[in-house]
Image (cartoon, helix red, strand yellow):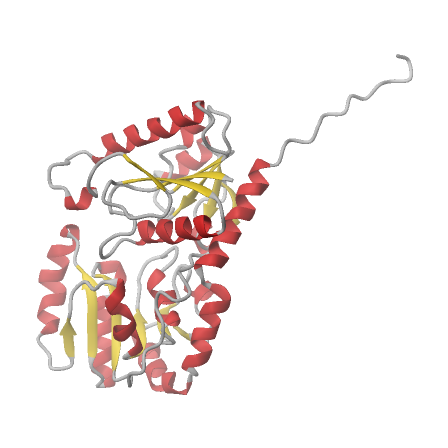
Length: 355
């Protein structure tokens, strides 16, 4: 199958550090190539891929200070995809750009689908999905769908990562961990309070976006002045196995309907249980009592930390292998592609007896 994967230009594919959507696109693209498909990746020029790379801009936009209007470059990329569709270069198009392709690509014949990677609960989303209610979209969790029931969801496909990208390491767990991004909705302040109440060290491996710098400076930085709390900063995939394997549990005290937290399956890949607040996709990802605990507040999180030692870390890893590998994700997407490529049933003309 000739497949185009169209990624955001914000980060390289894969990103050098943080970047959830672009990492998922990378893992999916590599698996599709490994399965024998002819894949073209539309992404920034500093991306690394086994597929054919179509670069719209030489550098990931987050790292290119000269770009002030990223929408302009995304529009150019979409037009380039459309032009290649005119030349019948692809059998299927897979977009990762939210609603941007809806209008343009509904007017051309190549079948396509969009994976929605973000939140859908903002008021301005409602008219979009009402207007484009026939455009096929894929959710990354069932919870993500709730605010937009009018959207044409054809399937939920959970994220997956390469089976051997992150593996358990022979280290003795001795701290609680936070991984990802520091923002109010991620609840790092709550994680710090949980660790202090438990009397267990907390290591925070997370990036601080420019938009969240004030929150970090005003709320988080003062909380770091404590002997149990260590702020590491952003880490790479290569550093994650040791970091996660050394954690008693990953804390995810989120306060928003997160569509899918990749850090949860990264933790499980290393055999590390997850203690997460009951928000968004958490009940779909965490098997309570097997791969971690789903809690309602800080008090119940503290209690869960006390029980985490009873969980079997080998069983956590086994459940990751069963549910959240990139190969499983790629096969799920291929099934979705094929369902949208099926030719329409031929219309049967009913002939009356009088004819």
